[in-house]
Image (cartoon, rainbow, N blue to C red; front, side, top):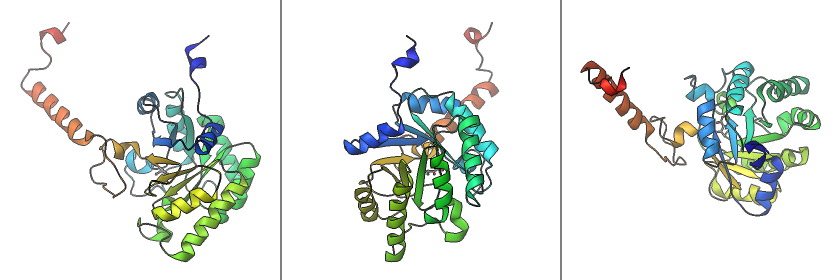
Length: 271
Ligand code: KIV
């Protein structure tokens, strides 16, 4: 028996059962092999190749510029590092909104070439046909409501969404629609905690919150934010578990000093 077969892989069904059993679901982003390996070894249930790669990997201001080819590349890198977690990959802006055929083509490429276990797409009733088409092809879909960064130019800000009744009602009805369409889970980003609680109690599929309070069925954070690599980003919802920016810049400046003073390499570090 190989080592791999002893590892119990997380599936969409596992997440459904976790909600039923009231066990919280954990998700983090990763975009490369080495990080994915560490995140998987840390025991996270699901890894998201988020289009936040556009921000943290490529340095863009928004998530809009990243392409499907680039997301497929990041997904391939992550897949090679993961043994246990469920791997979900974002379909980037412009690859699923225009029509359902294009959406299915994009999702198929992400599964076939990227090796993802599921795709995530942003939006509710506006992308109903795309979700139906992808789900009907046997591809698991994770929804994403609330602050949907691919619509930043429509919103104009990254502030909390659905504070007003009309937007909150639409969000709740979108969540019910996504469940009906067969999505296996749903990200709720930056919405009031009481709305996230109501949504989580109103649908049978798991909700994964980011800035959506403690009553979601699980939580997701961007890896670079939670390990403190991204100093300029400090929203209220973010808990930093490390200060890697300080650690890494400190290590780099020590290395620079050691080389400049000819302290590195020493005799034991030479052949
Ligand atoms: O792209 C991303 O990282 C995401 C998470 C913030 C949920 O969509």
